[in-house]
Length: 195
Image (cartoon, rainbow, N blue to C red):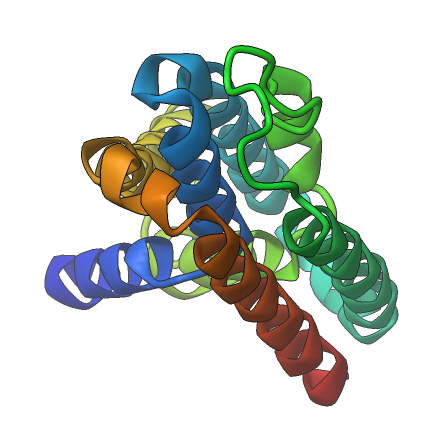
């Protein structure tokens, strides 16, 4: 196995801005790291399941990839626009002790199933770096756990950044919400353009 290219791909893809990282940073900036942990764990669990599905259904997904990619792109883009509107319509000074409904394990988990970045990330990692060298159920399970753990580390680090700078971000809450909303809109546009 080509470990260095695999690890570089996994780290760069996981830690770059995307819906998971942007949402975890936004939630942590409003409610703190501890209250964002359930969303982060949902992202990690969803990433694990997506990686496991990509492992066991890799050939099946490849045969249907053009169709799946288009529908996942449309669903993912629409969901990102919905999240962007939630960010843009966020009212400064809203009560941080009642986090947004989207800041939940279930939301973080479900986001992975319509997040084209995670789906394509898992398919690429599995098909390019894992399946050519490892095909046993145990190794596929371990690699899927590893990809889920990396998902946890990436969203956790972005949430930590949001929590550390919570007071600064609270002072500029409206501007921060606009920037995060615009980043989500940009992510949606990139998805639509790639279709």
